[in-house]
Length: 277
Image 1 (cartoon, rainbow, N blue to C red):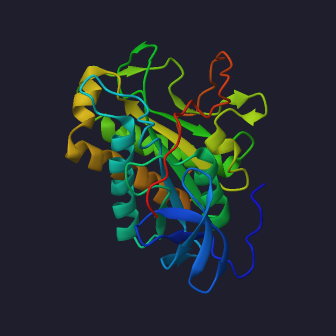
Image 2 (cartoon, rainbow, N blue to C red):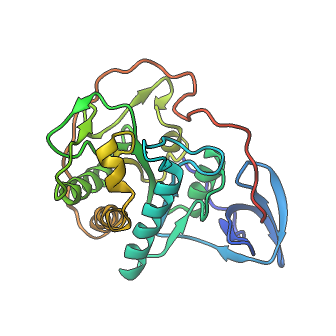
């Protein structure tokens, strides 16, 4: 479960350079924070964050580009662009939003999830794009993952899935997918396979793989700013429906078994370089 907030200590800080980090302790204008790469540092000034309704997590970043399309579009850059569109749409609807990273730099899974558990949002969504599909599909191969045993997480994942598939289905391209595309869980050795879901236990969380950046027609589509906006607004609609309705979502499937991954669902990452705070 997510730890309780520390009384009198804000959960996060927007540093003077615009980097969002978890706060460990604070005295006056001086904050001891967890850096994006997981170290501790003292920051003077910045803007304290006590809470957020939604925390958005643009996956990968910096020296960890994630999947790379045949057009050289990186998942890290695309994830951030789409997350920014989600943020704009949610803020226009009056929802306060925090991003786990605000530029193309590395942020460890530990720091991302610590920020989420300290801010205790009503919804935490990790934004990604996919690679290595099983084959062609008559429609978008969107996948969303929810926390095992969490009904709110399942509903959030189903609503995001529903909105993204509806939005992307307007485009006529040669889509690809995994054969169990849909809203689903993934079992790991210690519960949720994906660390970003496992480490945010107690916070309603979902991981969204919106489309396949490795598929040439989809990569060309995803490189277009208007398509990034369509994706982002669709994710935002799913989150808003989660926050304001009791809609159940849809697209739920049973996942097929996959071989274990020695990374434990966290992926492999090169040495991390902290940005200037």
